[in-house]
Image (cartoon, rainbow, N blue to C red; front, side, top):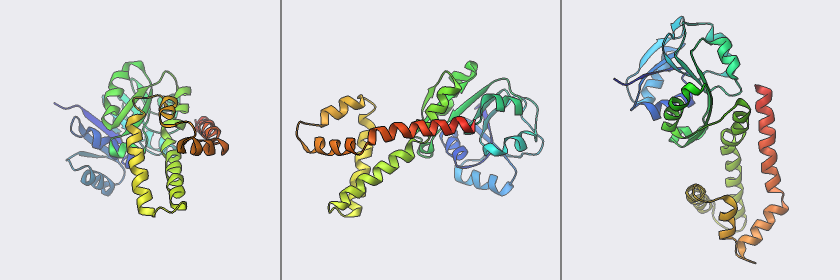
Length: 254
C-alpha cells in the first residue's frame, strides 16, 4: 500500500511537489480553507484526503510542511501529537525553530526552486541523517536533490539554487535584448534564447564551465569578443556578489 504524505500548506510549491509524488504516494492535504483544498485536488488531478488544520493530529505521519514562514507559530499551535518525520520547505526557517514549534522524531530542511513546477527543481536538503535516504527519494521526484552537511551550507545553496533561476532569467532577457538591439526580431530572439538555454542545460551536466567555455571560444573569434565585453562589464564579479548578498539575506532571515 502506498505511503501517505501529509501536506500542511497548499501553495504552489506544495502542489508542484505533490505533482511529482502523486503516482508513488497517497496524498493528504491539511489546510484552513476547504475551497483551497478542493482547488488543490482539482489541479493535482487525483483524489486526495482533505482535512481541517484545526486540531489536526500529526502522530506517526510524514509531513511536508509548506506554510508561509511567518505563519509557523500560528499553524503549529493548532497541530496535535508528534509526527514521524517533518520535511520543511520554509525559507529561512531553522531546524531549531521547527523543533521548537512542532513535535517530530526527525526533521529535514528542503529548499526546492521554482523549477519544481516542471519536475526540474534543484533541491538542497539538510537535517536528521536518519531521514537522508527518504528525503533524497521524495525530492528527487521533482528534479535533482542534493544532501548537505549543515544549515550554513543550505543557506549558501539557497542563494545559488533557490534564487538562481531569477539570476539566469535576467541573463536570458539581457541576451535576447542584445540580439534585438542588433536587429533580430523579438520572437526570433526569444525562440533562439530558449533553445540556447535548453541545450546549455544538458551540456553543463557533463562539462566543467571553464572547459565548456574554452571549447567554444576560438582565438580572435566572435565568442572571444563577446566574452571580453562580459569581463569588462564585471559580470563574473556581479554573479559572485549576487550569491554573497543572497546568502547574507538568508542568514538574516534565519
